[in-house]
Image 1 (cartoon, one colour):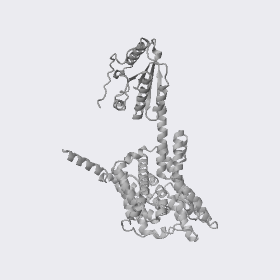
Image 2 (cartoon, helix red, strand yellow):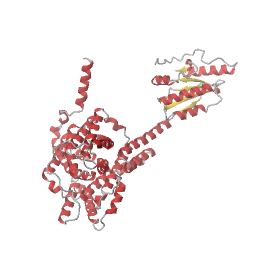
Image 3 (cartoon, helix red, strand yellow):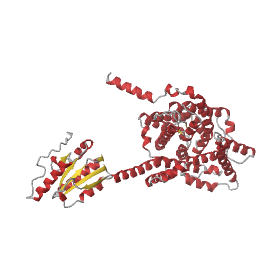
Image 4 (tube, one colour):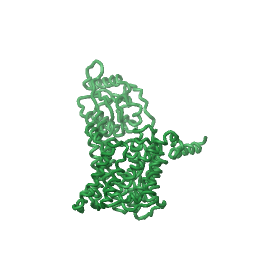
Length: 572
């Protein structure tokens, strides 16, 4: 086959791997009953969440419902997970809220398109596995921070007030108390408490009883029968809108690039984390991380065309899907069909739901996102992991979600490098065998572990402190990790010792390090090419010859007795 033909075949396989296949539904014949039950259950649970997330983001309940329907079915068909349920999520609301406040509701659909294209590009470039490099304390700190923000965002509606002007959730929650009507505040607060109580008690009645739906029904009935002064969701469409291209303002696109990148990064991270968690909860087969990104990107684009918001994989709904018996993509598709039925059959009833009821649902959702057992295990593990966890959570709440992930990874990397650096070192050893006169003039140093930019300077200081010696032997056979900085430090160390009149012999350069040390100058810094050894005994014998000659009439140059180390130097 020609080169062009081989490349075309490879490209074809690559594209097909990112597209749906009939293999995605090969198990439906035996799992369809469980998939339908799971889809119905998740659809019921997703309804209040979709409405609440839509309202909380500022895009409106309609936008949240459309996102759950459109993005839910597109991600189910095109995504890389067999069991993932996608739609609006709390993390996305946290990002969208400030953007909507700054630019208006009209930018949401545009952001969905922009972010969707970025996520698709990430999948096409096979960046899906990058999420595996995010440390566990960062993920949990990120989750804790999101939960706190979601809870704080619901405070204004829970007290019947307006959110403050600040883009920070904590500050906005505090500011909302400035405009609260204290004569009626007890009513929305009471409704939130009723929702929380029902959601807590429902599982005790029956483990599959959808507490959020029951709570919303009860509070809505009470509010309407008693004609309570509570803000309602308001009118909803009785059908899905026709798809259309969002209005693009070229002058505004530049200011939306930053938010679009943030949303895309969040969508990718949350979706891949959810898919990875789903694999650990069920035996529904592995997930394709790159295809998952492509599917989620298409889901956000489709959502934007229908007037929805960016979507991600939803960990809570995915877990409910699995626990309810879902095993294939059919379950997530059924979940979207259930929500379509709500749009066409029950929007009149849904429009009367009090916003305080949705706030109660989201507050309970936020509380359930926090696992006390997980927090205890991280805090009680190591000081570095606890620090990473706390810093990530604090930055998430106070600054920005994506910034928090970046800082969390950076802090985790710092502690990891410090740990690796601490496990490496330089050790002075006694010469093996029976000592002979003059051995006290020979220093044998063994390099252990990793010699990289985090540990190199410490090693340089240790060796340069050596005094009253004639020869230094550097053993590199135990060195596992070596980077350019480490190799450069070895070069500088050899040069510094040679300037002091100390002869340096190098023993045991590993083949995988040979090209690096050659290019950086370790070998050329030696006084003679024969000062490179593969055998320790030969190096010691050579060192003793130096000491002997140095003790006599000045001695000749040390590299001239033709000791052959049998080290093969690379030509390049």
